[in-house]
Image (cartoon, rainbow, N blue to C red):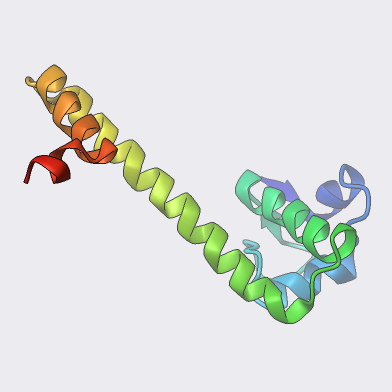
Length: 114
């Protein structure tokens, strides 16, 4: 976890007022009672950099940010779900057969045979 001053020091282009605005809008999470006590996890620091890229470098409209963040959060959620599914498949006693069936379904072979 990093304090806001450390985040600013190692992140060119980020400043306190911009970070405070993004926290106030709910676009990034900060732990702590206020800016002087805020701590940011690695994922939150990555989100700060993403917001900087979106708003400053790419110059997307601020009204579009919640939609973009929501879609990215959904993508990350789907990736986590797929990792969990793969862990279950890999732990299965019938892994080889199960993988074969999954590949067939994903490639459309099972639908053609129905």
